[in-house]
Length: 316
Ligand SMILES: NC(=O)c1ccc[n+]([C@@H]2O[C@H](COP(=O)([O-])OP(=O)(O)OC[C@H]3O[C@@H](n4cnc5c(N)ncnc54)[C@H](OP(=O)(O)O)[C@@H]3O)[C@@H](O)[C@H]2O)c1
Image (cartoon, rainbow, N blue to C red):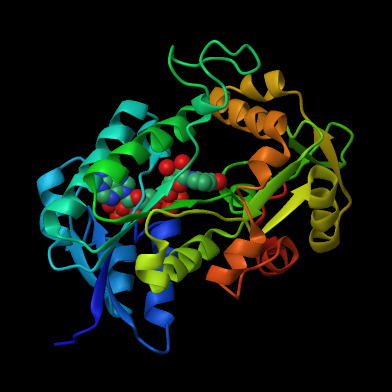
């Protein structure tokens, strides 16, 4: 049996945790072993992880006891919630608290919590610059994660905090990529308020998380806000033009128009973009490509990511 320290990875079948699991397995020094936590141990993704050398263990973030069992004997734990599966801040907060408490109960040495800002610290509920949603949030999928930080600080194993940027995969899966306008020309429409949007290749988030685990105790208590590159709307559109083989222009969509798009969570996402635009540099300095590169020297720029992924961007 290997004596390598185990990192238990929530979300190992997903984007963030998957990137971390692959980074651990690809390390030529084989410093750590992966324990992939999933609700469905027989899924294709879970089986692929097992085939690549991960231990696959069942647990559910809605069931704290299952997490404690799954974390037993692990040195590290990577903790990510998936707000978009249920769109419930209450459930996300409960899952985060269960993960936090389970790391402590299991004696985990180093937890990495995938969090985001509680935007209500910069925009109290009575601040009219950003609409209040559901009576108590400004950017629900940020706020619930940020609110959970205090639970990690007080009730979890020693924790590092990782703040990811907008995934460039949203251009593939989330309908955020260029669309054909009424005049037949391609347009990238995002509400950036004239500002820049920090973005990252999803795979690089896990590689950065691995960098945090490799740093060990010195990383405890620290916040790591990461990005692959920070680009303006016209800069994103110019990169699409170069790699998609068609001219793409940028349309800086009004925030209210974006919130009115009608997909589940459109108001939340619209507020997120508006939050970034109002704070500007104050937000962007918390998403640093330089910091990310110290954790993950292979960090991709948007150009590098798009060169490899252009054929996956649907041109609708
Ligand atoms: N998209 C962006 O631009 C962006 C940027 C920053 C942060 N985020 C945040 O990233 C989070 C999602 O992470 P992701 O993109 O890595 O997710 P993902 O690719 O959609 O995968 C979700 C993962 O979570 C696991 N999971 C979900 N519910 C679970 C539960 N109850 N118990 C155990 N595991 C559970 C799933 O595992 P099984 O299904 O195998 O059980 C799966 O591995 C969201 O909260 C989002 O707010 C997104």
